[in-house]
Image (cartoon, rainbow, N blue to C red):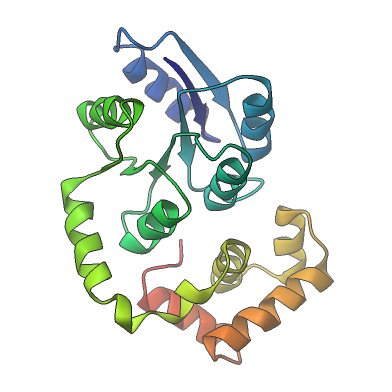
Length: 209
């Protein structure tokens, strides 16, 4: 089994590598520090599973996931996140992720997830499954942020945590004008007028990180 780990923290990658190499099936573990590097490696080789952090320095893990699934629909991607909120997990699963784990997961659960995904299944923790079930039961009461695209959702979070248009543009490698256009579109979809309203919404819905 060949596995690709994409996380911007080397200590996390080292820890994941050590856990994964406990499996006899794992032959190669390759590392990437950001989304672009991961996409480049996926262009060069086939991996049985990509373990992808949801928070990356160049583009969000959700955007990277979307790009992977668009180019390689059959790719298995296990999302790894600091965020247990079902909003992130549900969005990742809808984009085609094969599983979702938080970084406080025990090593045994990571190995279980890898085995299940490599066998063609999907994996989420029991507690997260319960939260998702509750969330799906309320699907008819769809929250405003669920209407946003991946890019709009990403920019909304950056605005909510106080990033300026320039900072956001620099981080996403797009112009201030483009960010401003996205902001206007986000505000229209959310029915909001000011950044402070957006921040309040994200805090109330456990979205800001």
